[in-house]
Length: 461
Picture (tube, rainbow, N blue to C red):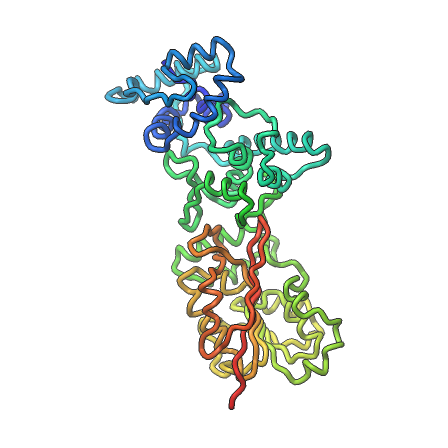
């Protein structure tokens, strides 16, 4: 006999991912067994099963659960598996086809089986897109207006996820209603970023650069109102602006080159083959907030003061600073970025240069009154953060200052690389080579966690 929970698992994961041309996915049942034996599925389902037994289940369904020995308040003991152990794969596939036939009345025994790993992202994506559309539609009904995934997150944070009525199957195995409604949002977003399931653990996704994300834990974190650092907007079919940077970074790092992907990204952006995700065509808002004067009003203060913009990209931050009369030098490791910045601002007074933060010109040491580092160190793999931070600190002259703006995360927090957000200890480490910390602002909202910090080098005696 097949457990009621397995039917839920089958409907949720196997059937939507299949087309009429595929047939039975042979490792669905093995996945289910792993979830029972290793992933605590029955224990996680127990609270919801109690509610389901008491309030939602009809007499026939209740009899099926009682036949399995499952009653309210008591966790069913997993029985010894009578199907997989010691059974030939051919027979197992046939048994699987019988299960499908019982569930769908549409199995075709002549169609060869597939592995879950062979199911393309587009098929999984359609599941998450459908679920997310149902959840957003439920949020729209609940709120009485148009709704977004951010509204769903807020409803979860407000404890109202259980009020959303959407087409998921009961009983629900998720630890809370918040996790239930947020998993489709997070899972779809992560898979669009190139994350794939790790073996049979559908809740653990592995990224292109090897990082592992527990989707359930991430959804639970978001449901508690904690920063989760992942953009959930956009549709499954919409082009992800970060996809090109992640793809090129993964290829570059696999080849042992930590910075070569920047040049490829900017070069491909020129031909339309790639998107530079941080190209907003405007200065960073946290820089504008920090230096809010109207252009020209600070020219006397800025006159003759040398400013260095680290990792200038296409030049928007450098141009903003130059309006205040600063003698501005801006550099990037990508020669294409430097060339494109000059083409974007043909009348600019900024001195754009191609240079490597990890091997900067010797004459830049202790040479600038103000150094501005915005989101550059975090674009490097974690093992390069320390030398990059040391280089940035070394640019500041005696009496000069450093402004750092970065994506941030907790020590050991999740990384959806690139970028590799900075931890509190890394941000504090800019106070090196004689620099002194002035102020560190921890800026948070549910979707983002950022930091703005200032440091200075005491004037020479």
